[in-house]
Length: 437
Image (cartoon, rainbow, N blue to C red; front, side, top):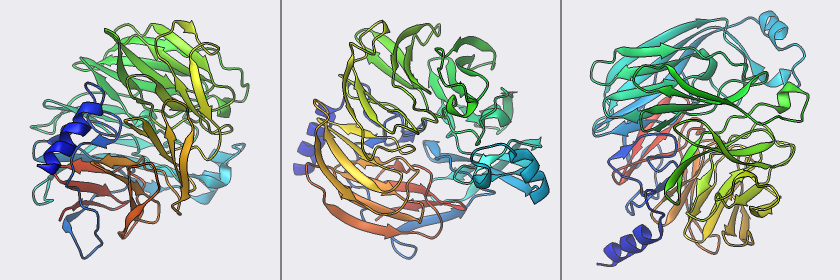
C-alpha cells in the first residue's frame, strides 16, 4: 500500500505526457526525453559479481545509450582502423584542441540487436563503411548519438557519417542519408521523432541549422537556419544538444539549444517561435528539461550556466522571459533532471547540486568525485550518476545530499543509463549490462 501511495504521488507531480513507460525506452533519456522513470524497484547496489543479470560484449565502441521496446534492445557502435600519427597531425593542424583529437582512416558503423531476457545477440548489422572520417575528441566516439525507436522502425544517426532507418523485424535498411557537417570534434546530437518527422540538430562549424526528415522516406521536410551568431571563430558556433518536444498550452514546441541562442520552433514547419540570447556559450551538449512551467537549458562551454525560461513568448524574449540563471558548477555535458519543485545537476567534474525550480536558489551542493559525461537518471526516489571510471553513485532525490551507494563496473561509463522493468541497462565502452536484484 505504501509503495502504491508513493507511486500515485510521483505520477501526480510529473507533467502530463512525461511519465516514462518502463516497457520501452525509445530515445535518448527515455520515452519522456528527460531521464525520469517512476519505477521504484531499480537496484541500488551491484558490482561485477553481484546483481548482474547478464553482460554482453558489443562489437566496436560507442557512447550512445541503448533503446528498447518489448523484449528487444538496440545499441549502435563503430569499429575503426586507426590512422597513422602523421595522418592525424595533418588532419588536426590548426585546431585549438589538436592534442585531444583522434583519427581513424576508416570506420564501420554497426547496430546490435539484443534479447533483453538473456543478453543474447540476435543480430549484428553493419550499416556502412566510411573512409577518411572526421576527427573525434578523445571524450567522444564515432557512435555517440542515441538512436530513436518507434513501432517497427529504428533510426540510427551518426552525424556526418550517416543517418539510417531500419526495419526492426528484418534488420534491412529502409532508407539512408548522409547529411555532411563539420562537427570539429565528432557528432553528439541524438535524433528526435515527432509524429512522422525525424528532427536533427545540425550545428556544425560552417553551418548551423535544424532540419526535419520524413520518417518514412528520409526526404527533407523543412530546414531552418539558426539565428545569426556573433562569434567569428567557427569553433564557437558549433553545438551538440538534442531537441526536446514540449507542450505549451494547446501547441507543441521543439526546444533546441545552440551556440549563443536558445530557440523554440514549430515542429511541423520549422518556423521559429522564440529565441533567447544566452551570450558566448557554445558546444552545448545537455538536453533541455521541462516541468510544465519553465524550460531549463545549459549554455555550454565558456559560460556554463543554467537558465530557466518561460516558453510562452514570441520573438526575442531575452529581456522578458528569463526567470533565473545559475552560474557556478553547471555541467557542459550531463543533462539536468527536473522533478517536482527541484532540479538536479552533476557537473563534468563531479559536483552535484540541487536547486529550487521557482527561484534557482541552491538547496545543496556536494562533491561526488570523478568525471562525468553521462546524464543522470531519476528512478523512483533515487538519482543514478555514472562516471567515466565505471562508478555509479546513487543518491537520494531530496532537499539534502545523501549518498545511498557506490557501485563499480569494469570499463568506462559515458553512456546515459536506461531503466528496463525494475532493472538497469548500463553501457560501458565494450559491454552492455543488465543490472537487477
